[in-house]
Length: 513
View 1 (tube, rainbow, N blue to C red):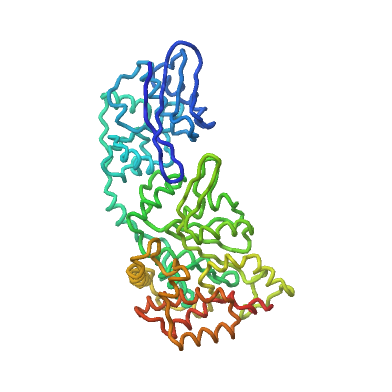
View 2 (view 1 turned 120 degrees about the vertical axis):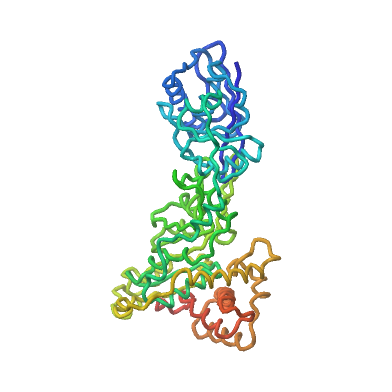
């Protein structure tokens, strides 16, 4: 007898329907075809043991399982449940009329218990798109799938529950989730807040500008100056995620298996901080069936690279294109997968190997030329994509022990949101641009006009500070953001003056060369 169950394969951040065909007939042996990987092939032992454990029998005749379309590679253990149910139907141990109404996915334990799977949200979206009534899946994943409305999400704990539900012996109420309530109740919950930071007012100001314009930032300072602490607080002043952004971010984390069993929706902007030993593929994504890397997991959030010069040169260079195009394209022989990668890059570094170059109190012990060689580990093209260079100095004892209350993240975020709203209106007619940092050179000329006084100031600054030519556009973009924060339609001289000070590494004599 022939049976058909329906599942999905996930490629990139999207899912594609897969038909699991099972034929039980005369002959011997178990055959699993349709380009399965090792995890799928090993399902035979899991399925057979689980079927026996719940009191059914595994057919001892010829069993052929085909995963169609057969020319697309299938990966993972999520096909266990549809294969098991298909075998039970094909061997006439299970009789049901509703099998074709559901997408079915789940990994089986040997006792028939269902384990959680990855990529549930894209699968649920695809199930609704293709007109399926519902989605049968492990209980742990039900909350994630319930984000998708107009779809009956049936969470089951084991294979026996799935069998009894399909036979009509067990009633399982579809899980209903209020996505908007979950989203709006948790989107402003952050563990770290700027109110706990004493001093460092100039750094807070720089991070506020970065958040308001979507600018990339690099912080240079000695060990213990507070670079990491400040970077971790940046997401708390970014504008809250919109619901479409939250769904897009959740899809990426779902595909990567980073949601966890309790999370249903990513409602806060991601903050990713990979170790400096990370590989190229782990950063941008990769694998036989490509998986998202750290820059895609940072989508709509922040990617923090601590001790930037310690990262391998090749790792840093692979970021250049994603920073420009805000997406990652991974090509393989059979397919090309695209992951979104619209993130803010926040980097920190010591000014030299010992960490004390330009320190107000401690002497640098690095030899001649060492500082320059250390900084040259970061290429010019990468620095070209970082708008703000901020020098972080140690906090004095008096500032640390002061009882003065600092401004909270919520207060700073209000100003950031107002500035972002101005930019949203400004770029309404431009596709794919919604923040000042995204402006290409031709739009910079149009949107960042300055008067004669401002031009003269910028000219003198570039000559006196030996600023490189690439700093020009960056200064104008940052000045535009500073003007937006001040609710000024025109870019004034003071806005340009403040923007100029955020180009430390562009000074040709910064490293004493």
